[in-house]
Length: 114
Length: 114
View 1 (cartoon, helix red, strand yellow):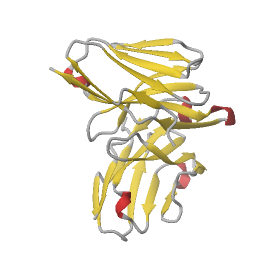
View 2 (tube, rainbow over the protein chains, first blue to last red):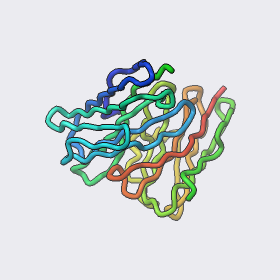
View 3 (cartoon, each protein chain N blue to C red):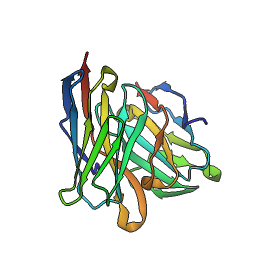
View 4 (cartoon, helix red, strand yellow):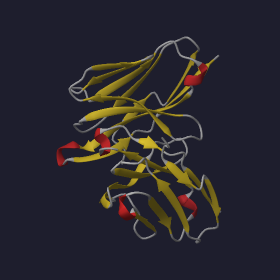
């Protein structure tokens, strides 16, 4: 089963524009992570935000977390063609049990047009 | 430092044949995951190890899938016998402390069952 749900499923933008992807999840979490996957490759970790944090930045990435709404967003500013990839959110699905399982959503496929 | 190493990268087998995938995680990482990823979908957890103990294998189809992580280091995932529906990418990942820390992924093994 998949805990996270990304929205939109696909996003196409022009180079230089900002891209925003959203993630909703169902259960309480310790942290939420975002990953990128280029076609035919493994996943690459982008950013981890803990449940007591509301916003985090890393270069052109900005992640927000709203635990009351069980949602997170990933903003990529000034997008580049190289940002074309699928983006996944992942959560630890059973934090209360002390079990640090990592569960992924279905992803948002981002296309940045040069 | 080497990342997570998986082999083989590609495998084509006939249905009903056995197949095995190998994963060498990052040195010092206690947690090892095996995920299955279908085209256009997010990774789905098959099994998670903490050191040599399988702590979450609820999603592993135990009638045909087996896994082991001897000495808490590298791991093998086996399918016997393979079915057409097993065609997918099998991803291995490792982390220091489960979902509480970032996971590092291998390139994956793309399995095609014909």
